[in-house]
Length: 120
Image 1 (tube, rainbow, N blue to C red):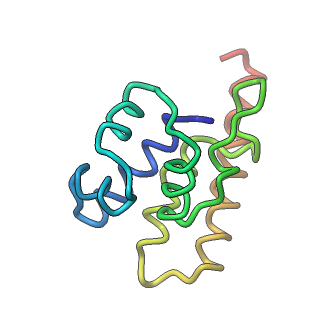
Image 2: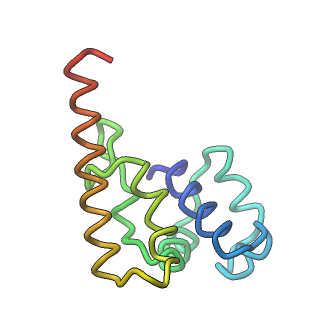
């Protein structure tokens, strides 16, 4: 699990909704210390993880990491950080958000591949 990406997605959505970390923890039904530990790279338990992804309205797979350290879907951290902000917009439908997620993910993967091919 990419804890940093999950924490960043929670932070983006929390900020968009004007919540404090304690308020977010209460909405999620988890302890504030669970979220605090995540900021230090420690993984939440399965039930907390499920509550977080449900609250974010993001599939759990978004935060899975392969053995190479890349997310299972191949989506970069950028996409996971942006999706909660996109979903919070009232002018975008669910289909719009899904489309933008795919477009941004594809562009970010291309940029990463180009950097890797240049040896950066």
